[in-house]
Length: 245
Length: 245
Image (cartoon, rainbow over all chains, first blue to last red; front, side, top):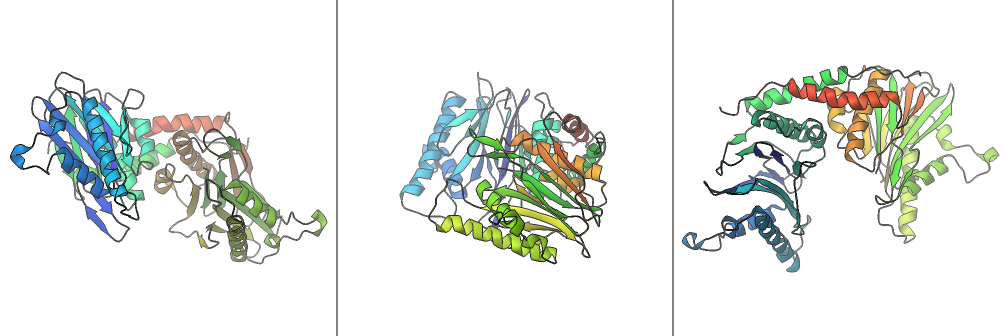
């Protein structure tokens, strides 16, 4: 499993992903699930991936045109004029990669499926955030649904739904993501530290803060421990109920 | 889907279940998923069910021996000398019922599977709480895992893990269950009000408080609305993080 979240804030975009991959519970590894594509001053793009690791790595490799010699590469993701076109490109690449594996008659215990979160900005347009499905189609974040989750989404959703605000600062957004990831990590062994954080500030058109949050990260520990206590206090602050009426 | 929780407290047992059943999102109904068997002064048993409704209703009917005339019924669930034997009985009944449907070549979009929570007390023994699997086997709650969830368990788990205390009062336990159910109802359309609550106090050997919590229940609204605010305050109370170091 995996857990990744992409959020659209008033100030820009924030992304967080875990790094655990697993084939069964007895075979776990650590892989970064966050890729960025950047041409400073012109565009900045982040892709988060959940699902079959071979599929998502193949998609990223194709997007980077790694089948060509470095000097011949001109990735379309760096040329496409709009984020919408990039979403179509990424969606098509994803659908084709899944189909290639499926159609050669290969079998796997798990499906070859994968789901992506794609976000970024191209000069002259607004920042945009998409959820790309294994079928190659996609949906865009809106004011009604300003964030997307992929992978193990359920444990960490209630706090996102309740505490998300579009005018959060980067610090507040990171704190919210850490709480959501902490709830998930505590409940599902297949989601694990370290976490990757990427902040993109609107109109900077370059990679903003990128940080890896490891198991010994002091902020993570403060949030994780503090959240247990805070949740207990929140619970205690609820009005009493009367069972006898 | 469904959401049911059974908890073992120092004072006894508490059970809560929702009432929504669905075959697709366009075909929902309301069914009680909580059954009790009682012989005052001798035993009190509660069963919560999640999964195929035809399966769980058939299991309950068999346990009540509804294939016999009312005057001929002597349900083994009311005769078995221990809760462990009752768990075996219920597990066997569940496994057989699932197998009957599967082996007659019937097909359904959803499986015939079901999972049960079984709790109660027989005079002279402690109250006991079991989770009964579709395979007919079962596990018992312990100090390490003092509650069981069945159905849509993920959304409502983080708060149970963080706020459960074995010495909670009935009011506190009900409040905790309401928060857990509220988080689930807000996230999954296939879990819905009204909720059924059953409290069993150790050594009373009779049905304790039973209450139906409907959509217009004042306590539920106070908890549901209060929880949003409390969660926001809890989140705000977390230590600030510094993204720049």
